[in-house]
Length: 216
Image 1 (cartoon, helix red, strand yellow):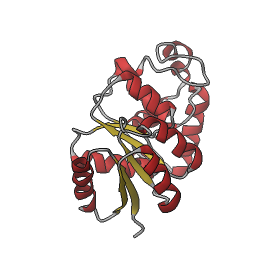
Image 2 (spheres, helix red, strand yellow):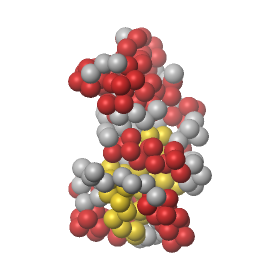
Image 3 (cartoon, rainbow, N blue to C red):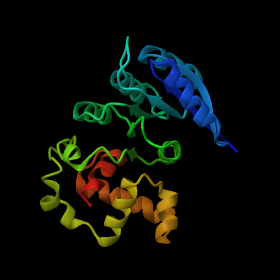
Image 4 (tube, rainbow, N blue to C red):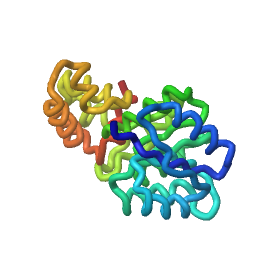
């Protein structure tokens, strides 16, 4: 079994060790490294090529948001999950715009964290439940020039019932394969629905679809 390779990035050593302990209990996870700022994260990503980076938002030297943007640009196969204690609108907006595939809070249960890691590794996105609808509605859909408040009138009515089902599952962090199983359809059909959702809603990527799913 090929393991999911994970890099932990946090300026607090005790947090890093706690996360490492949790992740090493999972048979399909491998912690490839620990570092304490964004600059170190960029260096290790270049060497170790992790699948997932658990990134704290606020760190010295290079903060997590800036590091996420550079990792997304330089290492597109590496997916970043921002894991922080701060449920702040600015951090959420900047993190997602920088290319993060999820925004999680450090108080979430370990089993939920592991589930989110697997979902993102499989091509999904994951948002902590406490990232509320009120905050999500204020994040602009990049490229579409519309806010979430504009979308129900302009776009959501265009969706078929099946597309709405797929969108809800995306919001829960499920991968295409998991959605296919849940809906008793093929993975290829799910991919077609995702492509249709992106086009109809003017979303840039799956992460923005996951944000929009909070409307339902």
